[in-house]
Length: 579
Image (tube, rainbow, N blue to C red; front, side, top):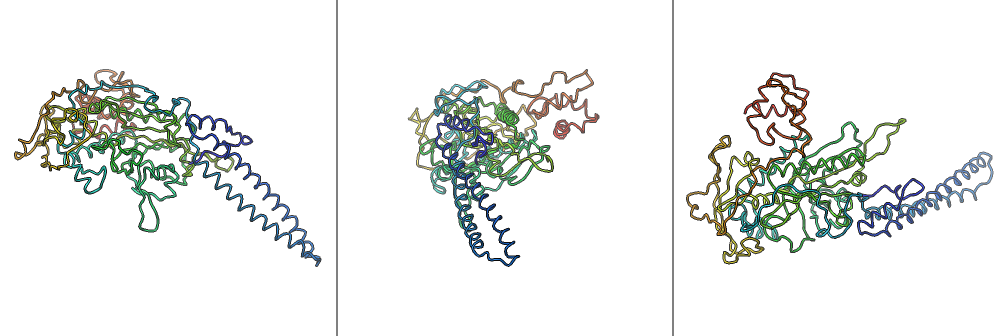
């Protein structure tokens, strides 16, 4: 994943001082830059030497040809040609070794840090808060996600550890439903925004993984898989295989931007997180994730604008779920080598009484595309300009962490409420009651709200029946019901739990939309379809994220209109015509 070697060469228009300053901002080695320049100078000297040797050999070969034609003696010159050939072979070998050293060191140099990134290596103190949304819930008396997930019968931690070891777990019943609901809602959310869904391979070849992962990731993060004579690595995120989706391709700029929604299971060793978040499913070795991955033209302003668009999509996703959050800019010393800037979205976790990371959004410019040889451009004078695309990635939803946040945010005294936007993906279930007692010692008040320990005894939760009430009746509450056998096991927490003060889903501020409904109605019988299409580019329905009476009204006014050229309206019509 190197920078362009020409950026180190002053004679080629490069400015190595920019790279040195970026390394200082990363708190990384500046000496590496000078070492690369020195080795590259040697490499270029060998290029001159080899060219001179070849030129000299060509001259002597011509002389030999003339002498042989004239039947003259030329044995000494033939020997000289052989010696020059040996010298060229040796020089080329030495040059290749230098090239290998340069390439190896280039991979240790990070991308050029954006000027807007806060300079520090202390994330805890110096990450910059860009903006906040929503009202954090008072944590008083609230429970942690691991306790809540156990109480609703959603997971089996000890049985998971017995099977898979440390951080192993089984999701069960409503835990599985929540996991799949987040996946399916994430897919629907991104497809409505023009993303193409990709489910990638879960293993990658070593040489390809080396192009997208830093060396330390191989030891701290990646699982190695062997057995067929060709070592592979389990993916830690769908970003990695999607980086290689267009490997060695030249993309027409007219096709850009290309937006992918990566859906995958992710596998991480978490070797560098020993002792962190050891309970629950916040930090585990295996989880599902919906990822945004976008390829844009190799233009810094376009990739910066796309990063803003991608973090905005993540914000709108969590606004629709009613999760209060803050967006932060990560300090320079914590950036991975590929990213010039990283924005995280941290949601409020009442059980933790803290903001915790749900989203990481990075602009990697052409750092990864150089390793993958993914280019774009148009022909110029019968030649293609070698211009690399820019690549960006952003979490939309890591399902395990999203489940944790949902449980803590929407917990009530006898269960957990489901945000309205997820109900259609939960088989109509709107409430998950507690079906078994807490595993935490009830006499330990500290552990009740912020425990890091669980009992060693494993209790099997009864199956939870699906809702029998239709989702189409908003006035009736659909609840995941415990069986008669287990109703007596439902345990209410001793501390009163106050419901969230905001509604579900939380109201979406229009300042985050790239469309506005102002001017939608030309009059009582005419709709401005351009205004409607622009609005539906951001939202699924006229009313926002859920269908409403307003959708029926607007549909009735335009159903006979020629709107085939408006892609957002035609997608909306497919969804609302049966309401």
